[in-house]
Image (cartoon, rainbow, N blue to C red; front, side):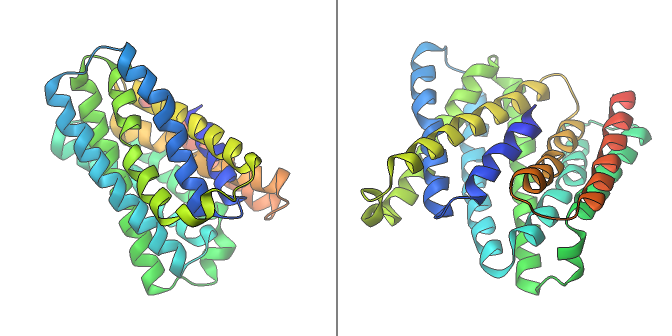
Length: 269
């Protein structure tokens, strides 16, 4: 479910006329409900706040790397590279930091999901990847893997998943504020439809990450990350069905690889 919702809000951003402004509205769409939640919910444990703050810092690095990657490469090239390396990196960090060792079937599932991600954008990848685009795409993937593990550890220490989720979402106020300041000259000219779509995208994004945090309480971090990255194939299917993008046979093959990977992970963990 998290993967599907993640693909939905990425499709919202992809089809927006101004992606940067829409990302700011998506961040704001998380801050508004989170502000209500932090008032109503108990505080997470003090030690988990260190992880919330660290995750926020890494998220800034993620947005920076992602923005630079899209300056040097297309979405169809950058996205599969950035997302494709995440499950393996998260699994490695989890081994080092929390001692989570996955069985070989789970590693096989992670590999199949990684192959499916690359196959979903094979034509774009085959056309070549510039050095700068590659470096920033890899940097984006590293940032994703770091905040995935940080939040996985933090939510387990928080004592309350909802509270950890709310405070993490609330701190997106810095992202929304930064983009708002940069785009302040055009904010008043945005149509109501853009505001509504962006804020709804924030709710979808927040829900997606809340589901991921919940899963991290009782499943290995590498396995959760691998399943979440199947959002790539959901995004590809959305692109094919609604945006008329891509070649259906290749995307169907990618979906098959990912489904096999999900099955292996399910059997292993």
